[in-house]
Image (cartoon, helix red, strand yellow):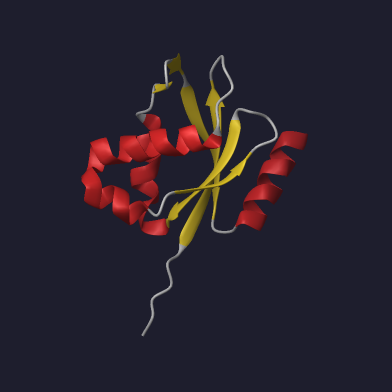
Length: 110
C-alpha cells in the first residue's frame, strides 16, 4: 500500500539589507537542518522552494508534515545568508498552497 507524504507550506519573510535569491534561502535552511539534525534529518524534511515572492524578502517553502518542527527550529537558528546578517520569520503555515496564499493575502490587506 502506498503512503502519501503530507506536506506543509511555509510563508517565510527575511529581514535583511540586501535582496536574496530563493535558492539561497533554501540552501541556507538545508544547511541549518543538516547542522542541527544531521543528514538523515535533512533527507526526511523534503525541503523545497515553491515560490519566490514579488517582494525580494518573501518566499514559500515546502516540507513534510512530520519535519515541520525540525524545519521551524532550523529557520530560527539562521542568522545570515551569505555575508549578510538576517532575521527570518515564518509568517504562516498551511497544508495547501491555495489556503496559504489566501491567508497571506488577507493578512497583508489588513
